[in-house]
Image 1 (cartoon, rainbow, N blue to C red):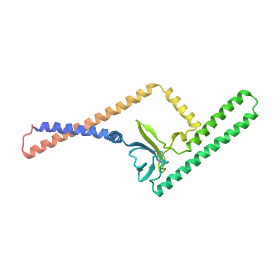
Image 2 (cartoon, rainbow, N blue to C red; image 1 turned 90 degrees about the vertical axis):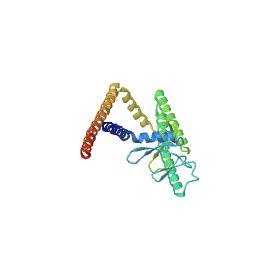
Image 3 (tube, rainbow, N blue to C red; image 1 turned 180 degrees about the vertical axis):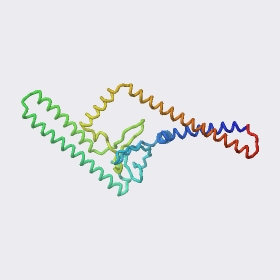
Image 4 (tube, rainbow, N blue to C red; image 1 turned 30 degrees about the vertical axis):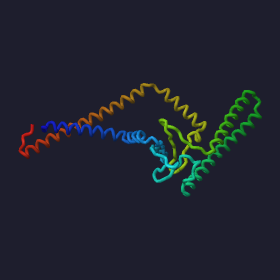
Length: 250
């Protein structure tokens, strides 16, 4: 094997290493999670929301209805707390109490709105207006019934790619239910966001894809320049080494 062949092998290895490093920098965590999901079939996806509104994804395997994240215990099913330590039980009961108080507050607020609507309905003389108020009263009563049902403890898990997924707030050991926090205002906000996204012309999407391709091309060109620079530098070092050893390099 001559020196030129060795140089080309070194350049190829450097190019492959640069491309691999580039891919790892961009999507290293996603690749790690994908490999964990592939090899560990008993794991679950865990999404943790911090006080700074950052959402971190983990892939964990529950053990005895528990997940350990950052030295804190999180419960998959609040109904099963027999195997927990005393400190963890206190955290679970405290979270359950806060959850019930929060639901009771929302139920009380809705009940006041129902009572006010009943009084307005009695004072209203127009039949159409009375019918509309009746519909609103029934809707609020339905919401009260749903909130009452949510007070019953149950395993609050979702599913992602046919596997269970849990959502936690950092420090709170009980999984959260998105529908518990969903309100009429949220519905209007989501409707407005959806309508805004639908109204965006598809040209913007294409432009974003073109920008991404340009960035990838620039990154690839940069990696190629680095590889070429390393190749010439290696060739120069080899010539210096050959001259020092008084060997003829071709």
